[in-house]
Length: 425
Image (tube, helix red, strand yellow):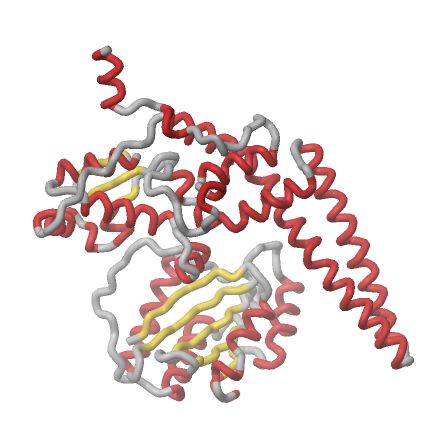
């Protein structure tokens, strides 16, 4: 039984090729095969084709993974299937490298595909149709070699690579946030109406049709639960969970009122100040109160909850803004320009030093030059980190400002019970 996955690579091609060809993972060189290229020189050959024919594109390669059930086959057969798959799909026009990894319980093939054709210079078109063809050919080869096939695969919405990595690192994603809220709403309900009321108390809009659909605060579209989260969240499955629930907790409490919202440690927010905006946003996420990256208020606004996985980045950006005392866009732009100039100067100096090593025959001089290059590399790391953080601030601080407005407006809105008390008075 083989499962396939397609990943668009926008980082460095050489890193991908080094990863899939790692001898610690393949265990033997015979399990690395080049299609229309030589494995050891694949990077150079692919780059030459890209430079001659390619149009500007952020996609440097396509990475396909073909996994097999544990104990179902051996490495030789799995590698043969991978090579045949690559030849049938890409062999006539593209270069790729096929590698079989044996470092996990299930054997799996990695295929690194150069997206530019060496025949006509046209690019590989990755879409749903090409992915379906990939799965069809993979299943046909498994049947040919007597391996099992998933006859009725369940199709659903795929995950982005960022979401997949966040899940692997144990960080919340928008999908896990919705799932946790749905589970809490079910746990605190004894019938369907109470379940829907709980979701609305958390802050979701709810539609009931052939399946439940919810729209979180700040989102433009509804999310279908069964399609997004799986069959355990269909109408029938949720009905059964409500019916067989042995312990019903109190209903979900409404959002906190304005009086409960303010806190003596709430950072002063000067509208238009970048560092003040970031500090305010961190406070709303519970960072200053709890000093924890994992704990968060159970009734946290959805716009904040989905950003929990980016908390480390926000903390680093806030520290940078505080250290450099950046309050205005002009100060941020000036800081970015200064850092960029420092990076350019160091890179220019390093290029001259590399030329010196190439031309010089003096061993002692070469050693001194290498030491200076190592110093430059060490100095470049924090500069490039600051450059990335500053760019992220420039791209997002206005968005954070609008989120703060939205969160505080929603939190300060009175609940139904508060409105009724006001009318009674």
